[in-house]
Image (cartoon, rainbow, N blue to C red; front, side):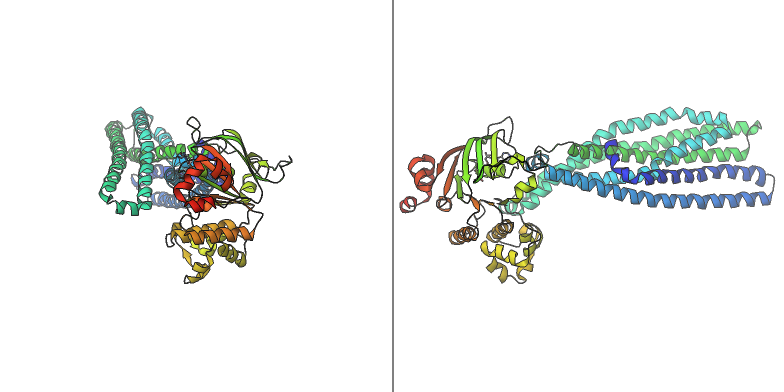
Length: 577
Ligand SMILES: Nc1ncnc2c1ncn2[C@@H]1O[C@H](COP(=O)(O)OP(=O)(O)OP(=O)(O)O)[C@@H](O)[C@H]1O
């Protein structure tokens, strides 16, 4: 929690002024019962009308002054908490962006979303309350105690005797609700994940008629959230009645003892009324404190979850400055004895991958599903670091590059197309935000997307809905290819990026890209032999190993894995050509 409070450093003034205003408000409030006691003792009982009016006027002024302080404090609290929340969200978001795809995947999108929204909101609320109320309750309690002592020490001691009981109630409440809040947030994460999965997989659920099954799973997670929430509610609900019980017992004792003292002539009626008024103020402050404690426990859980994300150090350590070391001339991509696994302790997904690709070549990567093809692309982009060996781009180790410099060299079209809401032009320009309209059209033309875009009602300004749901798979893929091409990258990686296109369109895309930039190195990852067979170099992956590397003819001759793939997919004539 304290770690997060450092984000309040731009609001130092407000953090001091807010509670100070509260302090002034409390002074005004605390003065009221004493002035009332004076009005009763010296005015009402003595029948001095002008004294009563004077004291009444003073009370009105103090009430207004208190109100003004409260109003300004409220504004300060809202300004500070909103600013704090915005800054915390920004920082958390940019930290999440600095994590590797593997780290983000390990955390999970829904829990990260919850931390970025619910947990930050919780912290924001806490900051507002901290400024407005956290100082107020202790001021009121301590101030009322002081005033009570100044009125009558004997009665004040009764009040003091109740303090350990109230402290115990507060301690027990915090102790038992704190873990429940953490569990509540985790359950919300699980529920969020379930909703996300179900919404994105709604078609599959319908196709398999799994609505009931998924509803039951949702209901079970939902009930989990409810049960934890009820547990928290049950405990929290005990606080107010228990506190009221203790304070009311105190009031009864004070009334009883106060009556005795009035009869004995050692206490005035006005003082007893003022005294009870202070005890009531303490009661109200304690009840507010209860809500604050509940809020604090929740905020503590939220702060823990936010700090957990901040504590993850990005596993890709970026080299901030470009090194002076000379690069290997003429080399586009090189793998030297690369060993890599997604799980450090598990089996490697790539073992001893060793190859060199000169600039300007078309490289096909082929292999069965799960054989490690996409992993090669991920390592070129440095989404992950290798366990052994090294990966070079343009003749330099990828670890030597600032990440943006490395990734600017590469145009990547992932297996799973991801488009963003906006227009078609926005989505293509996303690859190069400053690109003029002609460049957008040119990239779309190369990707064989221009014609279908022009057939749409608003052409390039036609909207793309979230995830490109209003486009077909093949249309989305072509926009994604255009988005990569508009960067005019030195290296283009198409990871199964044309799987939804027919052979003819797919061939047109490849030829157009090739003709546009003959010096560009192009990786085409596919399981289809027909797509990679014309590449200059073909890399054959087999269960994490490079089974062969060479041209179609040489591999067909020498690599059994490749020959088997070709035999299962191509006619004898196609394979021989
Ligand atoms: N993010 C990941 N976390 C853990 N394991 C992964 C991850 N991505 C891939 N793997 C595993 O690594 C292996 C290689 O996966 P990869 O995606 O490179 O295969 P691929 O040849 O591209 O497969 P496909 O043709 O089906 O796309 C597979 O066994 C896969 O289960």
